[in-house]
Image 1 (cartoon, rainbow over the protein chains, first blue to last red):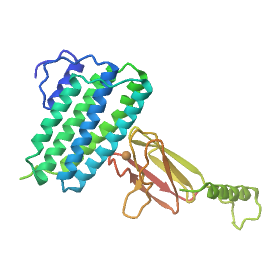
Image 2 (image 1 turned 180 degrees about the vertical axis):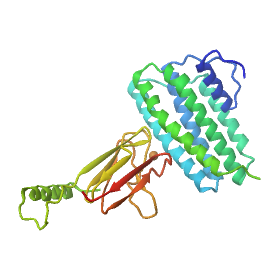
Image 3 (image 1 turned 135 degrees about the vertical axis):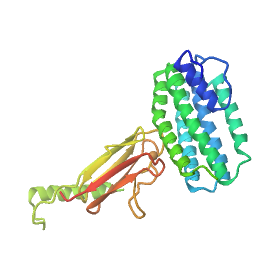
Length: 180
Length: 117
Ligand SMILES: [Cu+2]
């Protein structure tokens, strides 16, 4: 690994790595509308993949994990939308959102060929990596970039949920073993 | 959920009891208490609670995601899903108590100890 010039850039590259997109661009200085867009996109991506996983898994723990992802990330997005409305902030598309979406599409197609426990392991591996990347992005990119105090507070409030999801994902993943 | 009427009745009993107005108890029964557990930052605050039979425990969800407070084991108490800024409660029935958690988030743990006061 080469040395990164800043923690923010390192986090952005981690995010890009976890989402399967190679990053040439430095960590962008995001505006509040862009931060809001990244946050909503990150939540939507996890809801979408969880809905897909529910159509593919037979495992109770994986199914329950996916249900929690749908419930929680939907709830966070409802709050984010309400806040954006109140602040008259229109979320604005940007390169970080784009790289998240590209990584999500890649993760989804990488999972498609797998069945049964191999699918479960793949999905949970992705969820561990994704939540770690989102946590890093919150700490090093999104929270520092947010300038409106309410937007910043929402991101700060979201953090413990993401951290709990990460532990939950690790726990489910370790219960799945490594296959034969 | 305890209704306001039940709460008022209990309060009345407690007041009468405190005033010594002809209740059948040998000693004055302690007034049932109301304990509030806040759920925030994916944790129960306080996580450990000591209560007496007849007390009420209220869980208030101050988080931005839904939670439950659910006793371990098959036939324990359960608040059901508490959406953000909603609360749920139980009336403690018997001595003992239980570790509990959130059914939706296995990392969230708490405990209730029930002893006669
Ligand atoms: Cu919970």
